[in-house]
Image (cartoon, rainbow, N blue to C red):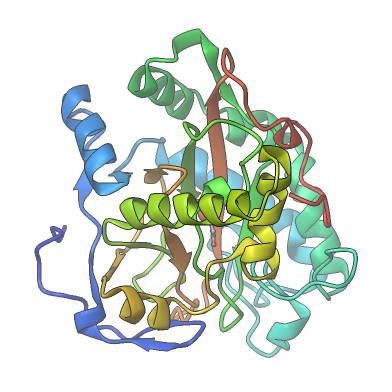
Amino acid sequence: MPHASSPTPEAPLYVNDGRLLPEQTGYLRPSSPDEPLEVLRDRYHNDGYLFLKGLIPRSDVIKAREAYFELLSPSGVLAPGTAPADGIFDSSRNKLDFPGIGAGSADANGRPSGGVFVDLALKAHTEPFYKDVFCKNPALLAFISKFTGWNENTLALTRTLLRNNTPGNKAIGVHYDQIFLRHGEDTSVTAWVPMGDIALDGGGLIYLEKGQTLGEEIERDFYRKATETGLTELEAKDAFNKNMMSGGLLADGPKDFGEQYKRRWLVTTYEAGDVVLHTPYTIHASTINYDAKNIIRLGTDLRFVDSSRPYDMRWTNDYRFGDGV
Ligand SMILES: O=C(O)CCC(=O)C(=O)O
Ligand SMILES: [Fe+2]
């Protein structure tokens, strides 16, 4: 497993605004869940993320992946004769009929333009295999409650986004999560959970090196600008998203953003069972999925808060298109 200081990746990696050059990238630093907690906490705060190898049993992840693609299979998304757990896209189909959730364009009601595929992808969020089993994974919950020290106050927010990046489709742009969680304190933890193995060019999440310090600066700056114009605190909260691109992104294109701030994007391959924890100010995005075998990238964002403190109540409902968050 490469270390953060290893040579940069050679495989071509594409983001929304073009190819990331090897010198614009580095590797995410992997950690073992068994390392001492103080070491892991320091690393999370210094790096803005913690890339935990094998935190969740692989079989739990593969089971959920299989159930997901069994549910979506009637949409015709899978290559004929392939196993649902493999999640292989039928490349004879038009990728635009299979748009990703939460990354691409949506209609006025926030619904991605696509037929039964989109309906089933939304439905998956409330299926028992996902909502009651996968999102409540005991290994993940136990780790977060110990890692944060929140113990029995550790609460998994109900709103989650189950994201399916079909090959060649648009990837999520540059953002930090507090943009979407700003009706609560800035202490939440996001667990990004790949649901399956993801090759380097298979559409995994990428992290801006030391992005959390820049995210904090950007946040302070927005806040100052908003209050200087005479807005109340509540008005300022709502004004943030107006200062950003529609959908709350800092930028659509990671390449240009990295060049502008002279920082590298950290990339990696992922294995089923890995989890990345990141802070509310950690800047991240995704690569476009150009997996050589047309494997669909599936992943979910599970968010945890300290329930004894104020948190963003808009996240207590299941995800719906156009839910305004
Ligand atoms: O899976 C993705 O493409 C985006 C995930 C994300 O932004 C997050 O987990 O915070
Ligand atoms: Fe995010």
